[in-house]
Length: 108
Image 1 (cartoon, one colour):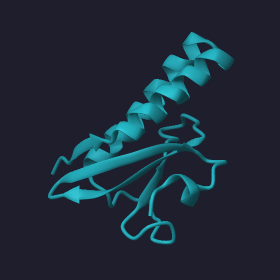
Image 2 (tube, one colour):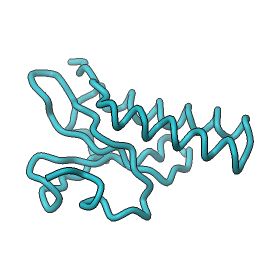
Image 3 (cartoon, helix red, strand yellow):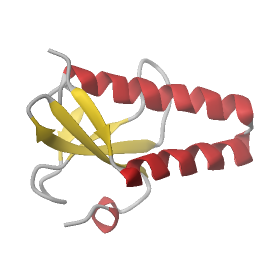
């Protein structure tokens, strides 16, 4: 079964900011590479919220889960924060750096 992803406006803004920062500090090629890494992580969620690398984060907010963006040998320093939004629907809420305090950036 394929799940549908719905990106919140804040998640889209997060991704834009991450890629702009990457471009500014590491150049266009690295920004493109990291965009692909983010895309691979999002695509993996289309297999559903219970894939082995997903972590339930009820300690932040009930029903919140995270997925580290590192995929298939690609390194990454961000988490995709999401929840189940309905039947076969995943709501991507944020894309946050792993050094951030997640509870501060995910609304209760």
